[in-house]
Length: 434
Image (cartoon, rainbow, N blue to C red; front, side, top):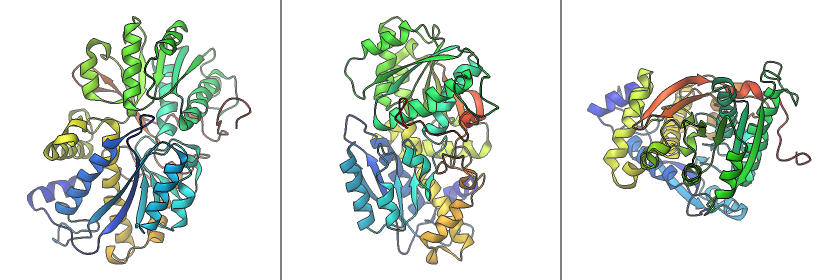
């Protein structure tokens, strides 16, 4: 991609021919979960691919254009009915591929797969996202599967916490991501439940407290007080952006500071504007995910640095909401997801005689065989080496960054925290629920 970026900067190429229709279902407009930044950034990427990179399957060296992308967007509320509605709409629109940014229910996959089109999850958060054969979870960090064990691994083994407070998003996927990917890793590391030999019991005495928090709850003083009363050595949290910073501000009102108890949050909480607004209350907060594309100077790899700078430049050039939201974690995921479509569909076309004749079956075959394939601005993808039972999640390497007060610094480079959960049974909720 770095070569494509450099070449097209001086000699842009416009796509031509029949468009490749990309279905895009995204939660937007519901206080229980709204992520418009996914789509805003995706549209910037589509414009860049179509008008500068020459489209999918282009040959920039030869000046030969490929096919343009059109984005078929369906906004969904956080309800099973709306998830079904959007999936049916994308199928009826006969898209070449379909992408779900994130979905709280997983009832979209049987519908989308029934069309025969390749299906992609940008941020896997539900059991169906983790386990549905033929779904490709392509986002860097693997959604909950990478980030949430990463929260626990970093807190226990780097911060040396023995008591971890886990406020968690009380939503359908939040229940699973807490019980399976936060509480279970704590218990495995403590040795109180069975798990992989390399993980079980290595942190004897480790304990945790889970505190559910409803999304968009106006006052979470009681929950924050419960967290602090546990007297934890570290706290972890993952939720939609607004809920993350509501927790930070509420904890601050109760006397907490990052220097008193470390706070580790997932990449979904990354919001540079809110971090700046929080002032001293945000300085020192850790984030699990990947070094954000909004911070090119923190990329140690030359290719990732070039891709990150390209992202920042394009979002700023787009202006408006794109420039405002460029630092949000899900804006990064949205842009990168479309850039991955450009990469993966182009690679599948090259392996199968060209973009003009590319079929969905050929894309599926190519994706299933991937091993350590580059992700735009992120960690490598390998669908052929996906971890059981999370067989649909193709990427789960994560990193740790820390907000310094003015920017982010890389604290821990890419690591794989799924050694804690490999081969374990998925816990879908409290005892008796799975």
